[in-house]
Length: 269
Image (cartoon, rainbow, N blue to C red; front, side):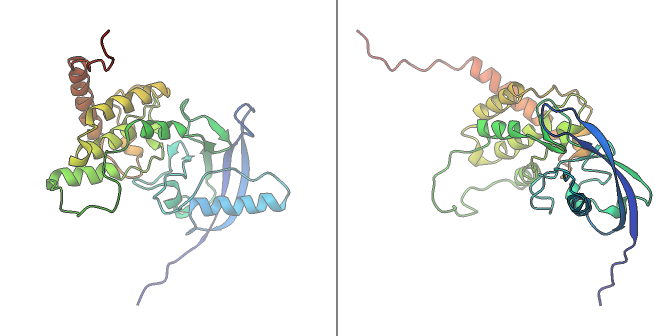
């Protein structure tokens, strides 16, 4: 027999950042959210508030969401100063109203970073992450059906580390939590999970150089080893991957500096 889930009601005040567009002036605005089921998720609560605003003829709060299962990384909000809210190892969509107390004032903001320009209200543009992935987040592989799983043996330690890094959902919480708005945890996770596998060796040097270069071009800050990134990560990805990427980057830089230039393909006169 499955025990019934107890629930109660909770009323809170939302202090939400409202901004009509990138060039508009923004401000916090308070909304009363009353008699909420404590077992609803934070995003469901925003849905309820938006329904009430719509019925009043007011503009609903813009926020990003998709899977609502902690997989896609779209639900990027700062709740009471913490990316994704008070929980550890969970995304905003996995944060429930039972995490708060009746009568609380909950401050909701977008992720703040120069590389994540604001679009509207709580929605930011994370295209910069896409550009970093396009720079090197791939492997050279034969197109067609999936190969036999055991065709390329991978040591257990390497496969476990690769899976740990591959959990990154690209939400950007690491950037929002970092005082420098650094993307080192995100980039190191993407570099690490491919660099640990045999299939990722062909582009290993080129990958880390290209992705780090693109990260810098997109305006992310430097890492100063505060480790707020791993503390805020909804997948609790370790900052150890940053050290691993730094070693890869140094090695790739040295190898590229002493790599002989390719012979010219042009014919002699």
